[in-house]
Image (cartoon, rainbow, N blue to C red; front, side):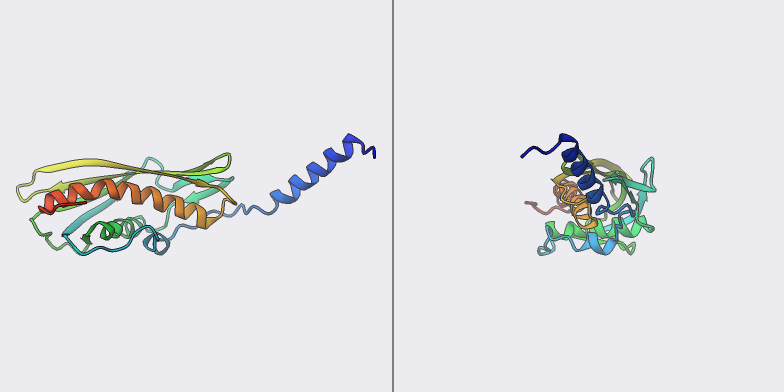
Length: 192
């Protein structure tokens, strides 16, 4: 059976156009509730309580978290609430974060800042990278500051909101896992 090559080219073009209509162009929705419900974090017994006094967004483009599949990933409207929900996941490491302004156990207080958060896609992968800065302030006013990086890569099945949110969650979870031992050391607890 001889089928003209032009016919196959037309079918390929038509299939490509049909599939491109399946991908949403609406911005991705990131909500604090979605991030707080991370399945990779489960609460452990509290070893340390910390007071987080200030949360800031120090990104150079705070209105955007990335671009995935031609869709913008705008920042949540309330970035401090978003970051509070992220820092609350320190409970997976035995750390209870308090955002009310109360003193933490050893008299240390903490300031947190989002330095970078970016999600994108590379061919068939979703990628996310975050940098959190945490300042520990002792009762004498001495400040110890560190940056904690997290990254995640997942298969990009459909550039959907759920996959993008999970990838960002995993990047934050990696940064929190790196942060936890330093906080536990400040509390005088042994961290694992």
